[in-house]
Length: 121
Image 1: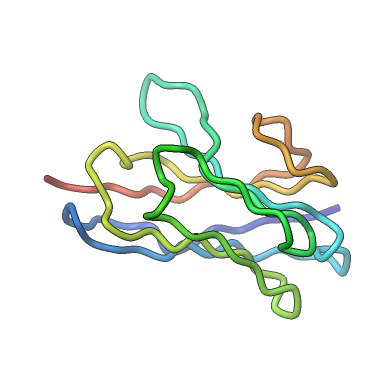
Image 2: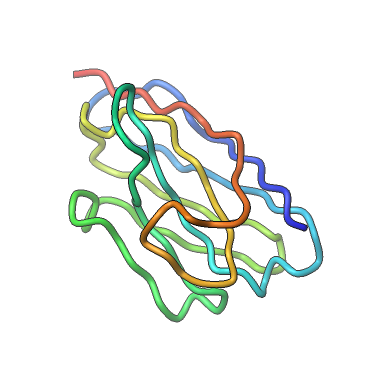
């Protein structure tokens, strides 16, 4: 069982930065691949970034490549999403997720409650 809690969302102007954190409970955090997804109003939940349990494999959506960086600290049971050069189209609720496999689709076993990111123009 893994419980996930996101933090770090907020309101930022276009071009600004935010760092999201996702704290996981459970001693087996290091065995899970982690992903970040987002969902804007009226849209489907979409993949943003993900990394394997070791951090050796990292994937990004094309829309965030070069602007977002995903990382994890297994000693702190935390995964991060550094978001730079934010755009209004990045506005969404951001969710972290955990699964034994690194997936591009929202079929992860465990999910956080989400954190709102709003980018003003």
